[in-house]
Length: 432
Image (cartoon, rainbow, N blue to C red; front, side, top):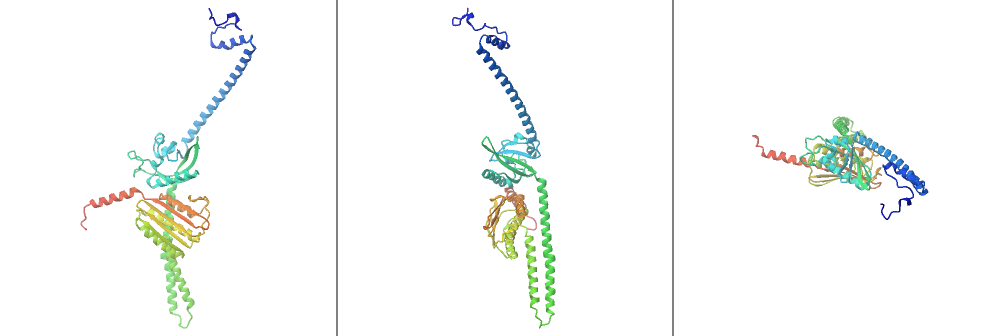
């Protein structure tokens, strides 16, 4: 018997169906709809919505297939790119890395994610990376820098073994935001071969400078001195009543020319600077520049002498020499100041002048761009070779300030201490 709260069977608007399977649902409603127009309209609306949902489902499925294909294509391109790609936060933590960068370092991608980029950077370029990240954080503009990377030591994280071969790379960084989270997209380009060629070009240029300086000193200067002696001996043979004032003036000009050639030869090839002799070499450079150009060139130094190798000292001297030449030729300065601030771990060189200055193409104190002079770009490249930070600030009518900042590697100081300790423990020779 049916429950008491239900009406009798003959009071239903349609006959009670039998549900043999779910497919009979629409047949049941269609039979009942013959007796109810509202049910027929509801059935039509449901069928319409069902068709729309099926169509939307097909579109979503196609969109999903396209997104999946696009993701796979992007993954293939990302991992098959000719350069390494990294996604960093502003602290230098690696969020994403592609396969080429992992192969460059010699590690697996999963071992890179979560690590800091500082782990793979040599000690002499840690400051370069720090200032690079700081510049990106403050300016939010694309920036580039060059540094050396290598696989870190597994026993001492963050330290690169001495036997490990380093790779010179260029970082082209661009800040962006994902879901309001600031990040940095970095392209890592291997420029080891290019760096080697540039070093060879600079070495060739250095040899050419030395050849020209030698030719000036030993060739042209000696020939001028020979002409001076010949003219002096010719003056001795002239009659006493003859006016020799013009010959004497010519002789004085020849002497001045010989002295100028000698000073130019010495200025072109400065003394090799290594260790404590950096201060002496810079002082001699300022003195020669003052005598050669006739412009007041002052040198000041404070702090203890740094420990630098010959190549680093020579590069610093060449950069200062280029800055002094620019101040005389282009800035038309009346006074040049060379300042050296040094400690056991840090060296800072500044060359400032009171010349006319110029308007920076890139603005601010950023490194020079391609549209600026060749000399500025050579100074920037020399700074990158020794891991120094190069900054330049200039304004029209307010002169120019060029500065170089360099950290002395700790390993060299430790190795020198070990060598000295080894010498102390060595037995005395028979000659002592």
